[in-house]
Structure formats: C-alpha cells, structure tokens
Image (tube, rainbow, N blue to C red):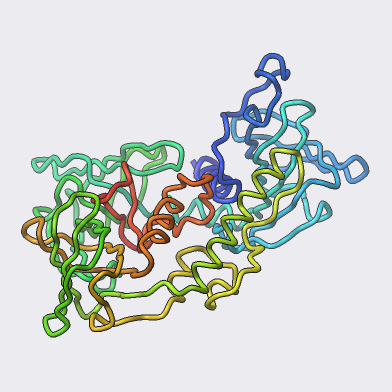
Length: 405
C-alpha cells in the first residue's frame, strides 16, 4: 500500500512537471506501439536497484514488478526532491552522480526505443515514506453518497488521472466540523454534526485508511459547500461589505458578502508579466521535450514580480504575494474571480478569496489552472487551498473546492 501511495505522489510530480498526459507504461517496439513519436512515450515509476556510472544506465524495479534499464545521456535532466517534500516547486537540480540505489525515481516521457530517459526525478526513501504516511491518515474529496442509517459517507477522491470511491465509516467517535463561510482554514471551522453533511460537499478527514484503500475510519471530519463566481462587478457597497457581480458563467447576478477572514487580492502588471513568461517557457519546454532536448525544471523561474514570483514558487504562492485590497478599493467594472460559500439561495454568497484584475488575464489564469492552454499543469495553484476553485470532479463555475489540508 505504501508503494502504491508513494507511486501516486511521484505520478503527481510527473504531471506537475511535464504538463502533459502520458500513456500507460507498455513494453514493445516502436512498430508495436505506433510510429515511435513523442505520443508513445511512457512513464516509469519505481525504485533504483542499480546504477552503472560508466554507461549512465539506471536499473529500476517498477511498482508493477517489472525491471527496466533506463538509458541516460548528457541531455537527460535531473531533479531531486528534498527530504519531506513532495511539491515539484521545491525540487532542486541534481546530476547523474546523485542517483543512488534505493532512491524512488520517476522518469516521465521515456522513449520506447532503447528506454531513453530524458528526465529523472529522484525522491529519497524518507520523502516517499512521509508521503505514504500522510495519504494513509488523510482523506480529501467530494461527498458522493450518504447512508444515514449506517453513518457512512462515500467520498470521491482524485488521483490526478482518475478518481476512486472511498467509504468513510463515521459510526464511531468522530469530531464533526463545518468550514466557516469566509475561510478554508481548519482553525476557523465551526462545530457541526453528521446531519450537516450533504452530497456534493467538499470533505477533509483525518483518521486511518484501510490497507486496500477502500475504507477510512475518521477521527475528525470537516465539510463545506463551495462555489465559484466569475464576472464583472456592477456595484460596490463598502459600508455593508458587499459587491454585486454578474456571473458570466450563469448570467445570474450574485451579491457577494465579504467577511472578516475573506482574502481579497488584485493582480499587478508585474504578476501578469511573470505568468506570461512562465507560460512561454512552458511552451518552449514542451517543444524542447518533443525534440528530445532537456526540459527546464519547474523552479527555474526568472520572471519578476512579487516575492512568490522571485522564488519561482507555485501559482498559489505567487497569488498569495499579491497586494491585499479592501472592498472600498474595488470598483464597478472590475473583473473578479471569487471562491465563495453559497448562501441560502443562489443569489447570495460569502467570499473566501477574491482576485480582481484584467478580465482577459483572469480568464487565462483559470484556463491555466484547469490545464487547458498548453496543459501547463505545473502552474496550477494546487488543491485544496487554491483561490481559483477546482476540485474533485468537473471543474466549472460552481465546482466544489476541497478544503485546506
């Protein structure tokens, strides 16, 4: 089970770094697999069992039990995850000499001819084990079904390329909480009960997962309902702490209240320029990988703009570095993306996070988060604490946003 969970962590790194969909690992010649183009490349995940310094060959025993000898050369790019880290933004440059027997390794985009590896991402045993422990004691997803008689909740969880259903047994001693209307922080959650849980809610639970991963026994459950409002501000009432937004996804006018814990940010020209540069570098990296060249690591950000931008951090970190604004700073005609808690009816909501800025740029930012422009998923703000929405299942204007871990 730990190997499976660690494999999922490494698979997530592959999607974040390469920003592309890879076909499942298969053995065969280029003729058997197609025309040998980049579309036929595969991903290898497993443990390093041997390293030949003279030839540059790395032998890997995959999680499927297969032994593969990967060929590397001067064009192969190397990254290593620091101990305890699983976010690709924290990866550091490495060299062939850093590859050691016992390392967990991810090789995205392995060429079918000669098992040529163009990139190796290394994760030590400690980091892999920590990721497995975290996944074994935490469950994040969307409530798909509720059995009130048995006090069971079926939770749909996302595994990047697929989803799975996990049955959560809440019949024991469980602490129930409900997210505050204006916050995703667990510390701000309010007391709740099993009766508060609704199908469609986002859920975060801590407890113990079964060995087969199909069941979860919780100690604490936090749930909440979230929506996303994307549109243009038509009115601002600073005294009441409210703004009126026409949701461009639904055409409905929504009154958005701002609570004491709501986070309001405005996109700066510097931030927009840095994001544009990252997109352009991602596109160049895709072209480079397609031609067999070495790709730039995700943290090689040279764009300016904010502390998060200068660090080359994730989009979430970059968004957090944006200047905060008040309701009184918002104006009629501003474009906004709001992650919110819905009110008693669909015409009202309470803002959790709000980002204001140029309408075209905010739409582009959402497309980046969903991976629809060049598929640069390594720029995703990440779930669950992203300010642009998303989550398990379909990502749409009213999609559920999993809570902060």
